[in-house]
Length: 155
Image 1 (cartoon, one colour):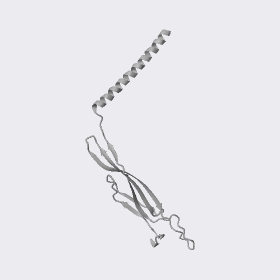
Image 2 (tube, helix red, strand yellow):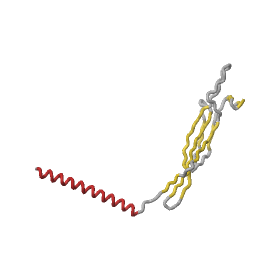
Image 3 (tube, one colour):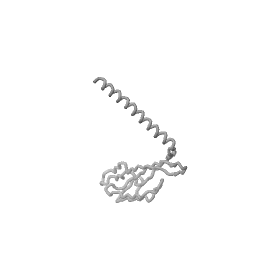
Image 4 (tube, helix red, strand yellow):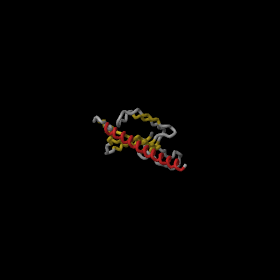
């Protein structure tokens, strides 16, 4: 690369390779490596990372403090000025090459709590379902019996 001025960038040949060894927000991540295609060239790589603090709690009171995250990537290719002799150099959205990580840290905490239903609540729900099934079957039995009685009396 040849730098004349910060706004005038002349590129002879540029291959961009970068490797993110470790990006740790909550749990260890795998290694990410990216090699840019020579046809596309280099450009501006932007990664927008949104981090939300999270607390997992179980019914024994143990807590795990960690983070949830999402990311979006954006690539803006570097456009080269016109290289034809005599033509005025035209730059279309020329950007400087680079890699940027933009973090958005949430001020809110997500709390995930695991609780178990007590045994008496479970038994109450089972008995309520059983009672509902018996009452619906009783209504259906009564309706079928009346329809059967009406049909037998007409004959």
